[in-house]
Image 1 (spheres, rainbow, N blue to C red):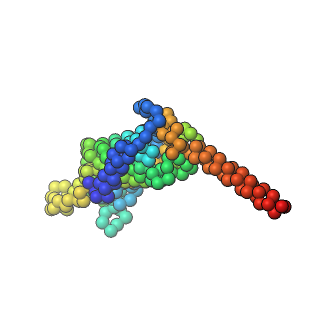
Image 2: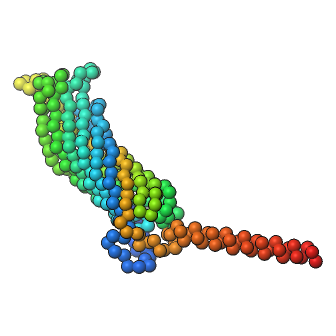
Image 3: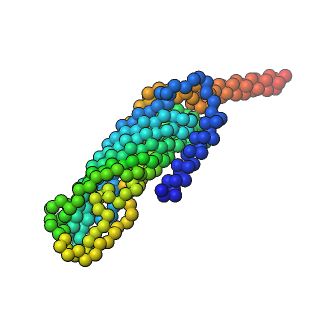
Amino acid sequence: MPKPIRYLILTLTVFAFVSQASAQRRRRSTLWDGVHLTPRAGINMFYGDLVDQSRTSYSLGGAAEKELLPFLSARIQLMGGNMKGEQNYTDTDVLYTYFENYYADFMVGLKFKPLDLALGYFKQRSFSPYMIGQFGLVYYNTKTWYGPAGFDPNTLRHHVSGIAPAVSGGLGLSYWVNSVISVNAEYTATLPFTDMVDGHKEWYSGTPDNIVAVHPTDASDFYYTATIGVSFLLKDSKWKNEPKYNRKAYLKTRRQMSTSSRKNLKSINKRRKSLRRR
């Protein structure tokens, strides 16, 4: 597992355990408190061994999140779609091979909201950035074909499928629309622990009848995903009625303090005017 993703997952886990011990609740929580459902759609960009162009395709899916703390949520994600790519023959513009892959990934992880940790749980904050750390499984079903520069143009080269473990991490930004709906954008990087997502892990020198040498490629493939989602809150957070975390309570208190300050200032000014008249 790459060190940055490992450190991210470890950090979020520590936050969960440390903060849960000190979290206070005003009422008994239920399973659906602070649960969000988010359908998602966007694009993926694949980077593999022999793919150097036409690497962008579509992804669809969704995520379910459950608030654990005011700034931390557990997350389950299911995404899928199409991946593709093309590889030209060395130093030419002639297509050598191309692939298409129908994939699905199932991830579990954590969502961390730094502003809610630093400034408090403001449910109605307009913009809220967040970080994601996940791990899970990727299923791939891949076909590769030879292009005009291949051994046998437009014929199937490989057809492979399988399941591999994977890790992912990324960033997101949520926009609050109302008490139930928010819109968010996410950008994540996923690393499957396999070299077969694009259907090949080695290439050959020579011809199919006379292979001169076998050349291994890099150990793993990876892909980026950029998606837009609409999040629906099923039931309010268990922290809704905590004055420490409630934005409405905060604004009400600020207005009361501001009104009180203005009244005190008026009273002081009146006394000053009264003293001057004497």
